[in-house]
Image (cartoon, rainbow, N blue to C red; front, side):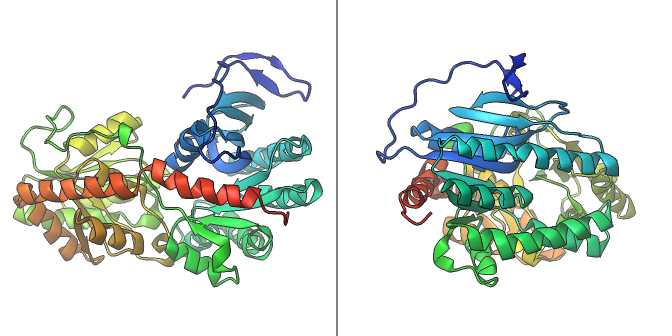
Length: 440
């Protein structure tokens, strides 16, 4: 989604952005119109489906008014306002440089921009302010919610504080001291101030719900919202797709997602070496990128060490449609999640997207992945062990009809249980319950 051309400046000095007038929203199914202000770690334009689809399409499409405070994804020197998802977005400036100064400058600009939430809440236009994965903005929101008598809701999609500290300990952080500081501050603010102050908390999984409860947060104040899909964006047919991107007749398996070191994806390269011993023509396609050039280099170095460079294809970051085309054409898809408390609480997006495209999946034993694989029958769930992972991949590559049947079952399951239309039903109901409470 591209930004609209700049027209001028508003009274507050922010850049005003031209954009098409949003259509008049339909009447909400519930009869209650939600008025939400969302402050999120997602950048603008929002790409993660739990914001772009769940909020920007499903909830907004039901007639609810949702405005956002986000930071620009691309280099931007001035704030501006854009129309998006049936509401408005107050977009903040950013610095996309990779230096330590640029990183600090980027976070400082975000914090300053997020102060706009006081002005927005003072307008009296909102029932709820929701903060997603932001701690300083969360503190601002707690204060503003008290001042203006508005409900404060927190959305925790990932244990970021714990990850910052883990990466600093393991030496995978580019700036370890900065990660230690961010991790310690984030953990204190999150569990001591923000979550206790929230009227309600959305988390990513039932595992995360239990993890947060161990910090003293009541279970009945939390709702788990797993990742889902919008069915219209995935092929309706599970028939084998003719290949345009991958060589015809070449057996392959594929990983789609981030390459961050915390995910230990050199594991997949070692799995590849074992699969090659049984299927010498196989290829592993990796679609995605990491936060740091060293993330990809780790995989390349491991491939060179094992002499499997010729079988590893680093596709890199691709537009969403092209990335999903790679998934369509692959024989088997893999979803490895390194077994740590940090990743155990996540709800993998790639797993449900693979299944939505009728792909048989090999995933390791992880709470959410085990649940989905067992309930759907869409693949194999194996231990985090190279031999087990390789054997499962080999068995599917050697039995394409079995893989196709698994893919069919997986797609049916995802359409029935993980479509964002269904997820939006209970998210909407929870927000309405919060908005109608008397205890602000």
